[in-house]
Length: 133
Image 1 (spheres, rainbow, N blue to C red):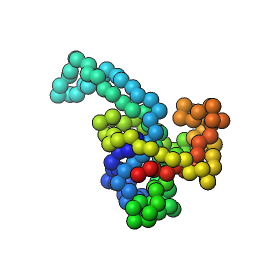
Image 2: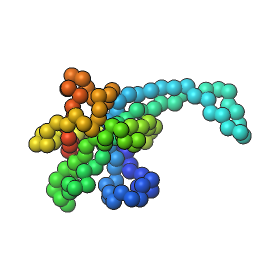
Image 3: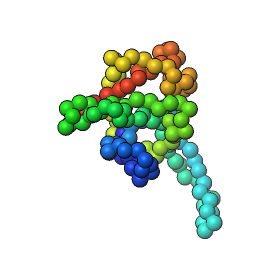
Image 4: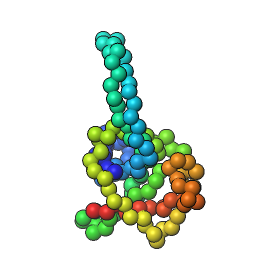
């Protein structure tokens, strides 16, 4: 899935791509009660959450219409604090179709064995994926 990038969050990254990409691991529905000092709502409301594994852009690869090449992304290291997160489903723009970059092969050191890796795939993922346009 893709969401709009939030460039204002990290100015140190020189990435002009307007979108961020993620793989949905799980969908959660929770009833929460928001307590503030000004209003204490006793009635819980339903909150939907997506648990995602974020992809990072391959900044060494030129992609897009001008480059006449698909954008290339890959998983972040699993021990990186920003590799996994929760997201409001309303932030999702649309689903995406990613294509494994077969020429670069598999890797098992990015996402250590976890719920994001499939045991049936020997806890390996493709090193890179292309974002189909």
